[in-house]
Structures are given as structure tokens and as C-alpha cells.
Length: 467
Image (cartoon, rainbow, N blue to C red; front, side, top):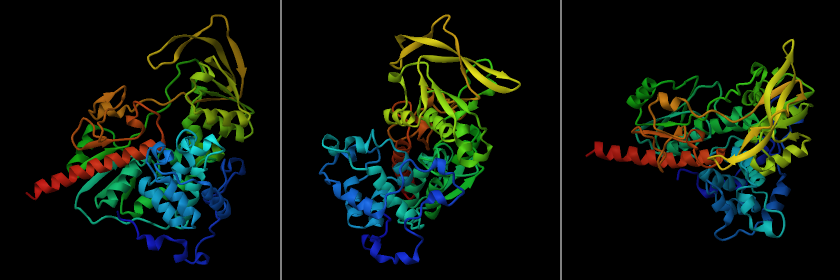
């Protein structure tokens, strides 16, 4: 590993008076709307120590097995208990380079905290908040715990700077490979920067992780987009391997009258982070959909003072959102109307006035295992509102066909090493997630798998070249 020696990782090796305020929150660095304060505030040093001492430090801990990146959770918590925050952060970031983001956005209730043995007796250890406490301690100070590996002379291009792209870039840089990270947007970070609402992850947090990758020697080039097979072939002629972290496409069209008045849910979330002043105000907002993105969009509208109603054509049992997210939305005062299908957006003079809907009934089970909704004739009704947000999922990566890649269910097909059907081309993240739940932590693990496979491929090629 290319980490600093353990002796240099205790807090006692630095004079904290020479550093920024250790209780300073990154959320206050930019103009900040208090309506979007983090759902869970940072732990104080005392709170973190008390919580860390609750941990049983289990042997063969179930929380480690529940973590897709297999962070050694008992070890990082024990280091917090002994006031070794940088050592704790090192343990986390060795396994998950995006530990700061994942501490905020991981569905810990479904993963590590859900597996905690203390669930049977009392509340589980606050693993996510402890992870954030340790990682923020080093990242707020700009402390870099890792160094680039000894140069190998091999080059890799990574397309897309979302969680998968950042993860594979960091791991390859630590192994000594020269990495160029290409990002089509103005800012790096992908979904973490543009698609996670502020109260979960401020922009500053994701940009710190982009800076941490740069500190490993990765060249980050923004405004660079992969658009065709020719551009992919050009990359392959210049680099030993290419990794694609393309994410997903846009929110699909609904094909209903008045669709031009619908607000794209992903764009709405992005504007709430990057351009909050551009968001239109409405006293009543309807959100179409019932996934995690729909709940995020509804939460933004609710925190901005609107009465929010979510429309979903199936029932609560079929929602794709996590249960804890659904309960969070209810606690925010967001209303739900199940078995409801929008069929028309109503407007007067260009201003939305409502959504015409039809009631649904559930029928036969579809290939995905959920009952198929069908309209109930004569059940039309109107939900009055001043704005309608569409958050019904995202289209599959259309670029895959243009690049000549094999697909599975519309997603890029990869093997266990994250290798695509094209030699020397790998992929990971949401663009390959044909099975399982798309999430930041799964994308990070994809990047780790791909980095190991790419390193093996480049090493073998180097050995062959040297006879």
C-alpha cells in the first residue's frame, strides 16, 4: 500500500491550533440556505467518542460483510475511540476512496447499520456518522493519506468522474499508473456533485474527493466527452486501457399532453445545488414517481415551503425507494397518492394549474416481479398544483450501442472483472447495473474491481513486451 506509516497518523503528531477549526462544517463554506441543513449534523468529538465506545468490535463483524466495499468497520471505530482520527480515516479510505460521500449517502439502514448485532438489543452503532466524522477530519484539512505508486509507464483513460470513475482512478494511481480522467461537465464528481440533494451532500464534499484524486497525480480534464466509436478508438490508440463510467441517461418522456410543462427531476435537484436562485416557487408541487430521486426532489420542494404530493401508479408495497426514505418523506409532511397515473398536465397561459389523473388497479405480475397497473375507466380526477416534477427513473446508457459494446437488458455487459465485450475496455457504475440496486457504494466497488483487472492486464502486457 502507498499510505503513510501508522506512526504519522495519530492526532498527536499535529498541533491542531495550526489547522482550521476542527468543528468547521464544509456546509458553511459557500452561501448556505438553512432550510437545507444536513439531515444529520456532524458529531462532536465527545459524541463520536461515546458512540465509538458502544461498538462491540465483533470478530467476523456482520457490518463488514454488509458493506459492498468491505470497510473494516470495527477497526476504524476503535481508532476513533482512541482519538486516532487520521488512522481511522486511512482504514476507511483504503477500502473506499469515496468514504466521505458514502458516509452521507449510503443506505446504511439497509447495509452496515442494518447488520449491526446491536439491532437485537437497542439501536445500532451510527456507523455512517462515525465514518463521516473521521473522513471529514482529514479532508477538511486537505490531508492526503496516500501517495502515487512507483510509475509503471502505463497509461489509462477514465471516462466519467462519477463515483466509479473516481474510484478506479484513485486505485490505479496508487498502483503507479498514469491516469487521465475525462469529464464532460464543468465540475467533477458526477452524481455526487450534481444529483444528490444538499441536505445529504453539499457540493464541497464531492469536490474534495475530486481534489484528492488530483493529489494522487490523476489529470482531470473537464469539458471532454466521449461521443462515438471513433473517439473511443482514439483513446485506445493512446492508452493501455479505457474505463467507462458513463452513468445513465435522461429521465424518459411520459408521452402525455402538456409534457412540455414537466420539470425534469434530475435537473431540479442539480439546480437546487448549483443554481438555487433559478428554481421557480410554487405553493403546491406534484412529483411523479416514488423512487429515491423522486423523494429527493419532493424534499427540496417541501423544504422550499411548498405543499408536495407524490403520485405513484402502484402501491406502497411496490415503491422502489428505500423504506427509510419513504418514512423520511412522510416525516417531512410530503403526501402520497398511490394507484394514481397522471394522464395530462393542465395549464392556463403557460402556467401549470393541475394534473389530470386516472385511478389504477393492479393486475398480473410483470417480468420484473411487480403487478402491472391498469387504468380504471371513468375514474379521472384532477390534482391542483402550480408545478409538476417528473422523476420516473432514467433511460439506459444509449451510448453503449454507438460504441459497439454488447449490452444486457440495455446496460453495458461486463464480466466479473468489469471488462466489456471490447478488448482493453472496462465499465462500471450505474451503466452496468442490470441487476441489483444502483448506488454510490456499488459504483465504488466496481471501480476497485476494474482497477485490479486493469492493473493485471497492464502488468501482463509489460511483461510480454520485456520478453
